[in-house]
Structures are given as structure tokens and as C-alpha cells.
Length: 200
Length: 326
Image (cartoon, rainbow over all chains, first blue to last red; front, side, top):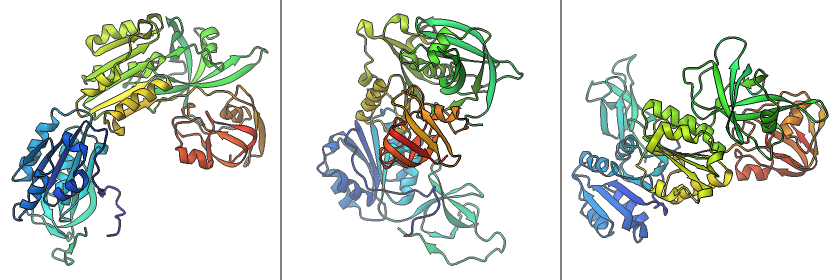
């Protein structure tokens, strides 16, 4: 995919444990578990690593859970959904200290939700590493009704809150952890281009 | 003109706050109050110092502003250490400047601001580095923001404002007197700070490097680390400078900075901090017959090595002639 010309569009890297960190918190979803295993397997940092994992419900992620269990980290929390995972993250961060580094991997909307919650808890942007694994689905905010839409895979997308058709832009809010969705057919209602799936 | 808006000010008060530090209160004398500024700001004073030969020499030095006047105010205050390596500025202020004297003062600039979304602030000062740090403490206390203040000094007499800071902030403030073998336990301080803490250090170069180094070893991210690194520009061997665009040629004296020599030749060259921190005076080099002595904290090592630009406020040439695109 061509790099976006929009500066706010997040870029993702490859996870790598920061040796001087006093505490590592890895929060991963679905295939993100494999990114974590790639980076941390056999690493001494695992002794100071808390892993939070949410398998994706409709897929068989037993293997991924097994991969994480085999890592022998400090603690492994499994959650059935992202909301529960974020609750656990907030609890852990409430007593975390400045040497803490956060590692996030999963779908694009998952990375966005986790990152914005972590920033709200006071973690600095440069203490967070991200790696994109899995679907290139986006979390979008409808700028008209302000509702959030998770798991958006193509643009334009229908806002389930207000019924508008939204052009999903590359403009991104770190605070909201979401891309911007703007009405695409305001001037000629119903005149919609065919949906285009997001690239990886 | 370069350096931003200038205000004519009068020296309203001079107080010795320690044997080597004087507090100056500067009031605007041409009308309305001075603009508001945030903690960590500095101003550049233009001093006309008398020379031994009976002439005057123009010196421009940056000083951190004491306190904080987010609402503006009739006067600014600075604290000046009498520096033994002074090229004239601090000695002039200590020995010659009197109440009633008039000076030119630049509008405030802040290169060392508080990070206002931080949840907690750890302030560390060494010696005269207390000036911006005390301003930060005052602003944080007024805003009800959590902070702790660590202030290291050689001996109790040299610690400007120590008693009043201790009275103001009580347990949030700790003093370290090196004559009593007291050292800042940096690692202990850094180890238990909650997520969302920012660290601010102002003091001698070695202290800043040591504390920021300890913070990085303790896993702190760079964005949470802040330091004020004003350099007192040092003199050096004299060299010739030519300004390619204006065709002016002059000499940089051994006690003069490149910027001062350019100004003395009548050119209003760009500057802001005059301490190698802000980057405003970055000037393209046409040619250099000699070795560039980069002393700033603005250019990266790579940029210094490629020698395309120079910070005229603190850097110079060891050699014959420097030609600038100015």
C-alpha cells in the first residue's frame, strides 16, 4: 500500500522488547499473539512481562492461546472481549510506574482502542509500540452523530447510528483512537461510489 | 528586529539572595504592563557594559524568568549568578548595574515549558538552575498539580531561594547540600514515579546528562524528559568572518561570539536564546577555512559533521576564515 499523505494516519512497526524497561505490558488480540511471540519468545524480558490477550470470538484461536501460555511470562490474562481487556489494562496501569512499556498488536481498530485508552491513563506515545496483525479493519467516528463504528473494512461505510454513508478518511484522532468518517453523498444523496476495501 | 519585540525596562530592585546571586526586578518604563509568560521562559537582556578602556561593549545574555505571570504584570524578575568565567555580562550586572539603570529586554520565549497534560512533575535543580525550576514549582502549586522539587547546591549559603522554597512547599521540596555529602538519590526518585510523570532538570551540564541518563536506564521514554541546556558561550581563538551576501568582513575576537561580531558589524542577524538551544540563529555556511567548533544542542551529530550550517550564538571556527550566507 502507498504510504498515506495524511500525517495523522498511524504507522505501525514491529514489536521489540525495550531492554531497560522495568515492566512490559503486552496487550494483543487474535493474530497479534503471534507478533508478540515473534518478538518475546526466549527473551529475558518475559520475566517482567504481563500479557493481556483477547482471542477473536468467531475464529479458532486456541493455538494462539497455547503459544502465549508457552511463553512463561510474569502473568497472562485472558479476556473474552476487548472491553474486558481494556478494563484489565486500566487496572494494571493505575499502579504502573514510569519504566513501563506497552506493546500492542492486533487489528487496526484494536490498536486504536488500546492506544487511546493507554494515552488516557498517562502513558507516553513513545512508550507504546504497535504492530499490525490481522484484518486492516478500522475504528471510525462519524463526524455527524459522533458515534463510533468498530471493524469497518471498506469505504464508504454506513453509519449504524445515524444512517449516513461515510467516506472514511486517513485523518486519525489519537485521543479517540478512530479515523474520521464524513458524509460522502451530502450534495447528491444516494450517489455512492462502490466500496473500496482498506489495504493492509 | 531579531530577537523579537524589545521592551525598555528600568532596574527597580537589586537584592543579593546569596553571596554570588543577585535578584533583579525590571519594570517597563514606557507604558503598559509586560506580556504574560509561562514558567520556564527566558528573556534576553541587552547590556551596555563599560570596558576597561572606557568604551562600551554590547552584551546580550539570556536569563530565565523567576516566578510566573500568566496574567502579565508590571515587572519581570531574574536571578543572576556571578560567573567566574563571565565574558562580562554577569560581572557587569553584579559590579556596575545600579537601581534606576535602563536596559533593553526581549519579549519572553519559552524553550523549557511544563508539559501540561502530565499527571505529575518531578523538578530537579542544581545551583542557579533553580530559576526556571522555582517558576515551575510556583505555577504547579497555584494550579494544584502534583509535583516534587529536588534542589542541589554546593553549600547552604550558595543556595538562592532555598529557605523560601522550603517554607512554601514543605515536604514536596528536598534540599541536597554537597558540602554535607548529600547527594540526590536519582534512582530512588525515578523508580517509583507513576505513569504520566514528567521530569525537568536544570543545572550544570554534567548533572543534566547524569540524571537524564539514569532516567533512560530506568526505562523512561524520551518524551517525558526535559532539560534546559543554556550554554554560556565560550571565547576562543580569533578568526575572520565574511558575510557573502552583504559583503561585510570582520574579525571575531577571542572574548567575542560569532553572533556578537556580526552584530558589532551592524548586521541584525537572527537569534533568540543565545545559548545554543533554540536553533533560531542557524546560518548556512558558504565555506570554512578551518575546523568548525560546534557547541550547540540543536544540530544533530550528523548535521554538525556535514558542516552546512552553524549556530552563531555559541559555535565558532578554529582556523582562518568563515564565509556565511548572510
